[in-house]
Image (cartoon, rainbow, N blue to C red; front, top):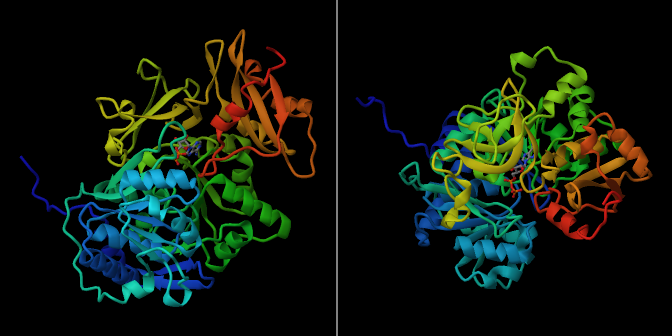
Length: 542
Ligand code: ADP
């Protein structure tokens, strides 16, 4: 027997409709690329998104066409997402921090037909547009007054373009499984792989994301997504915030410590989300110039492991709760968040921080398990680590054009490529990426765990651990450190600091100091580059 409830497809357009009807005047504030702060609301965002949809349809763009954006988080970028999805096309966020050749590869793979671009990236687009034959038009996210001269054949200023529409457009009625968005993973091995979100996955993901043990946002929140929309589906925030009716504050291109401090305080932000690097910059700014964060309640930190000193500073010094989160592009992207369950509610001090070092537990809609190489599920004992696998309605079931098919098994479990353990209360902790884990004498050493402890040394700014070939043990760890400005720790200092905090056989065989550690476009340590750089380095123990 079937239930007798209504079919109400889970579409992105329903999200902006809800925001515009139920929270019409809720603020959408942006640091514009042109300079001043810009203020609008959900009603106006919907109105302008309808104009975009109307124009796209009028100009012949079709259901399923990939429409790219290369833009900061601003109200215009938000309007584009809803305009594009509202007419049945697919927003494709491009990461401007990638190398131009990678961008050309990705745009050709996706066959992007139109591009919305911020002024900042126009020179980049001018250099690569000719190499993307599918690209028919470029809309520059600015007004006539700020529109620069450009040699691009079919370029128009966004505000001028919008003047051509009256917004009389009804959202396309789509099947909820229709593609809505696209984002490529960085492809540290092989070519980047396209992840194709559906309307349904986006909506379900946002419902999970707004819940109390996740982002915990409501109509009283003021959310500042610093994580760019082009990084891992913007952590879903472009959908989650309007769904919750929360005010949305966006940093545009300004993501340095001083600007973040200013927007957090002037816009009375209650909840914000970004990778650890951003928070290190903010905390450095606060240390140097002073300041308080009276309105800030929650800081969501993910993308790479959150250093304990960041959690400690926010919670003990500034009174804001840190929520450590883990996810990936393939998961829309939320996987787990580290809220505190009653089982851990009594903890304080270092005991609490040790739990908050973990990436946490999944909201409803994400299943997870840890297995060994033979796919046998490992115990939830907080120490046995193995391959982390996930499934759920906002997890990819395949990549675009079916690349990487080996990562998905017949029961729909997706192998994340992360290595983790899960404790008895369900808290997951990442110990490594499968390709970075160090295999010493048949056992695994977690590079991340050593790095996390090493950056706790007051004279160490950044640390990376890689495995180097070893005649006896197969591989042994090398610790690579960047010194804090004006500090000069020795090898012995750093090793002494690790002693007692990790097992003896995990102790790095050597420490080297470098000026800089290479990073990916998403700000993560590029282990591949480090392994290449140190491939002929001989460990003193070898
Ligand atoms: P990319 O593969 O392009 O870096 P993602 O942004 O999708 O793209 O990265 C996902 C990966 O980032 C995860 O598989 C994991 O290795 C890492 N990651 C994300 N959040 C955390 C976290 N809180 N702690 C440790 N690693 C994390």
